[in-house]
Image 1 (cartoon, rainbow over the protein chains, first blue to last red):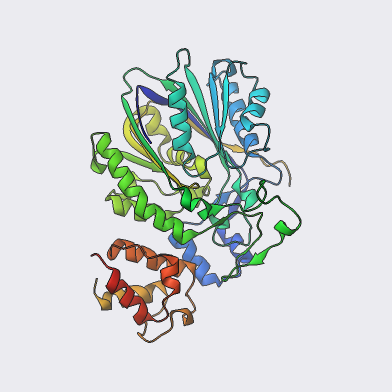
Image 2 (cartoon, helix red, strand yellow; image 1 turned 120 degrees about the horizontal axis):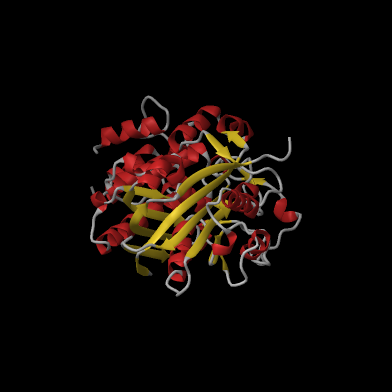
Length: 359
Length: 75
């Protein structure tokens, strides 16, 4: 579906990552794979360090920590939040919605609209579009988009295909109407025939978790995982991204009256360095316009990667200047989408660490 | 990209100094998911076609792989 908005702006951004950092060099010892190949994998994919929560920490804990910091710093007031869009594939519970839990903990107004959105890699794009739609309503001034996931809790540490690349994070984007901000163009597409390419097979109603779904088995490469764990068909996902994302973005750029050269910055979902470099080559965009370093610093945190890429690379610039940017997310669903808009002049663009509680 | 350049690229992907036409791909110690992904990326960027995991499964030797690249290439 194509979208068009005018005068919408991101006005502030907060990124919360766990204090706990794991190094690929340590993860490597758990894999049933030759060390030289794991090292090559790390070089190609950009594996170095990733940040994961301690046992028992939920995505909403990271988000709550970020909100409390914003309230304490006077950068956001609970009473000015008109809507809370909470995007996650790792909700605290099936019911109630996690946005409602946060609503209660943060003391938000009764007429603050709360919405959980089940989206992964494209979650920032989908969440932002949801916020823009809410801002079309009279009286809605400030919408907060939270992207929060703790995927590490669903990935087997013995799965070399997934474990080294994942990270946990929560990001908070403040979204408002701003006169003169300009046009926003967006496009989001879906291919549900390939919905199962990225999945957590067990734990829902289709296949409830049981002692059996926790039993790990090894695949042909020695990666061990259970039906309770996340599994992805990496090659199929790569092919999907290379085949379907560039034409969608070319259409989007055309709709926005520009081309790839006319866009200053590409903040894309961060699956791994390799895929982002191949995407940049395909779009004929220089690497420095498309940051690809979130995986090596934090890990791939699903919908939180785009705000993470912005805060990690361009926090100062985004507070000082306004750029023509392209956001794009692709993955779980399969969902793929993009937004072209002016972005910058943030009131803040902060990164904080969620403290370790245990040893 | 011609055959020799392709073989050099494949050798590089498999951490070998060279690869032989008749060799079974799965006999190379470095034949793993990273190698397959690198070959899939090579097909996409230098040969202009989408190579899938099932395609690769059906190929046995280095010569089979090159023949498939030759047949499928659009550039």
